[in-house]
Length: 526
Image (cartoon, rainbow, N blue to C red; front, side, top):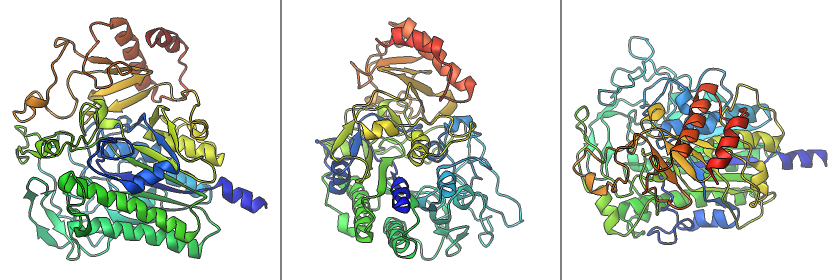
């Protein structure tokens, strides 16, 4: 009986992370979506759907860092942008991570999918491959100088995972090969040319003979399903953690044949359907293995959707992006990838970081619940620790809050006092959200260059405060962030800026002595 109770308190945990999926792409979040997502909708119907969940960043790598460490990425060496496929590890040595925490709690841990947090590769002279300079005034690295026969270090196995199968970075980045544990499954020995079309954006790089872009999603899904089923047969008494970061619907858009033409949002919508089918495959595997009742499944995205009437930027430094009509393509089909939200991936506006977030744990969380609890994906660390009754070290999960009480009670008062976000510009383009107020410490999107790009200018909203150096929005009355109140409400802006600065200098956002700030902000957020 004691063993059964312990098993119940240690659920299996699966974290499914879509890549560039927007708030409006999922039909249970957006009834007007041109993409029907029955499996994701079923997950929500059998669990809890969060309406105010956010990524810590509007781009990929920083969000993944925040999920696994409970810490904002701009506190690391990566102050802005993302890593490429050959960058060295971003997670610091001895950093507590979700998998290392769970491993100490008796879990088997696995990662299947897109890592994109850096691995230490070795070049053909036996030297560590260095990081790309932050200014990144060069094209992505090809990898023809890398010795792929040597093991990679500092990846998933160094951060608490027992087993890994996946790719090093985004689907469009070299090296184009599957990696198992610390080595490519098949050496990437074939040079591949860069492809730049409307929906196939793939860098020049090195490719394994067996590797095709279109095969990645079904291969990863198959490996994740196999892990669930094998674990149920070989170690049913041990709980497992499966971190499953997908490669879709990030570019390149390569839906497999069974999904082509099945959505009303073109190839993008078809690729989202493949994501939905993957969620269904995981749910079916849990049911077949008899562990669905005591498995906590979480589903979300690493940032807002890319296909929100968006066109790639072309800058003086990097001219390989060609203006095209991707945004118009989706607009013509009547689909809003980020629903009513302003902005897109890379932007500091809500469309850049408000995402679907769904949890299902049949034995502990009632079905068909909705929560408006302010949530950040960094909160997974503290919440999982609370579920397991594990103490976190003082210097771990600095920006993670325990939301377990709110997961059990959808009417629970707000737990997280405030939240910070970063745009593509990182440390230079932060925002802070407190109650209904949101302050950005900069003008503009912080990501895409709407004002300077001829193709993006038509998406620029009229600026009601053109001289304002920062932005302040009241999300209760202006969820679309159309009216900048920075000049109209200086007292609110000042108090929010003080709290933002305090959080930066304090090195953490949890357990801060906020008495003075709380008094000020109670007045400001009435």
